[in-house]
Length: 338
Ligand code: NAD
Ligand code: LMR
Image 1 (tube, rainbow, N blue to C red):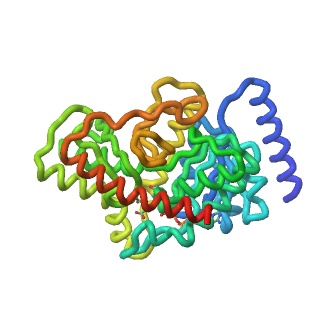
Image 2: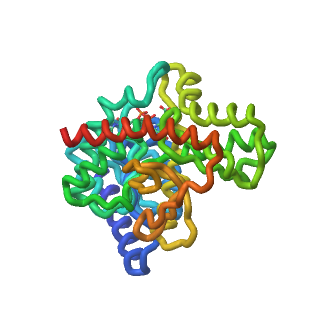
Image 3: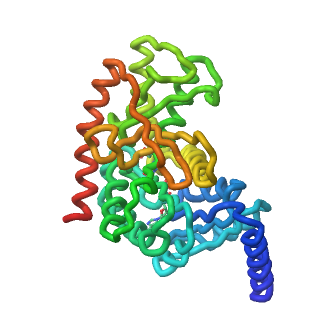
């Protein structure tokens, strides 16, 4: 009923106006790919996040239904839906954080790199929109292969003259979430008490858990190190095989994405000491991009932590990771420069 809609619009405007007058209370966040397997639970969890004042849900299908559904939750964020390429710009204007889980997921037998041909073009289009409509937004890139899509995004932003390495972050949080879970299982601890740094990238051997730096301090047998490293590196494949053709991790990913987005928003708000792992433009190694612990602040990535002391097992893992990462990064860069 158009009259109802008008009443809602007027109420929403009144609320947003009130907020603007009362000082900033919450951030404007867009999710691109919001109707997907990750997008839907991610949208629900972001609607529950008190740091979010406006939530834009964009996809090329099904956003009206997802938006209608989520907008009935009695939490603070105002939700708006956007459908199809012609509404991309409207979805992005004014956004302070853009989370991108758009793109196809793996099926059994595929590598993340097998998704490159489809997802590279999707990420390019979405990042062109960001460069045009919200060039100062923090971007959380989830679409695979992350090791290539982050370099693609960087190249798009460079071309547009808007690239700021502090504001582009590949989301590797799921690797940390898995590592915390699997390590806690082995140690017999509550996963909430465990902190495992995971560095490198987000695919197979590029996922490098630093088990020598686990908090609380602990030690593992060589067998445990082999088991944990293999399980963390292949956690994604474990889910892809269990889902048997119905996609890859969506629920744990939505959880990880919200954990990471919330850290970015706390940083933007000015909280001190917000540190998480992410795949960013980096000088920690000779590669142009690398995942490691970063401190998040008002301008995005404000400090990139060094890797810290590695043992021999980790040093050898680092060499393997760097070799594969170099190829994946180059593939992303060439996709735009070609
Ligand atoms: P999905 O197929 O369930 O959802 C993807 C959504 O993207 C769909 O709703 C689709 O309509 C939308 N989409 C497609 N093209 C689009 C475009 N041009 N603009 C906007 N939206 C578009 O897939 P999913 O399970 O949600 O996974 C999404 C991506 O996230 C995959 O590439 C997957 O590999 C990746 N992923 C990454 C991580 C990580 O740790 N970084 C974890 C899990 C999945
Ligand atoms: C994951 O780690 O679960 C994602 O990257 C999805 C995948 O393809 O494994």
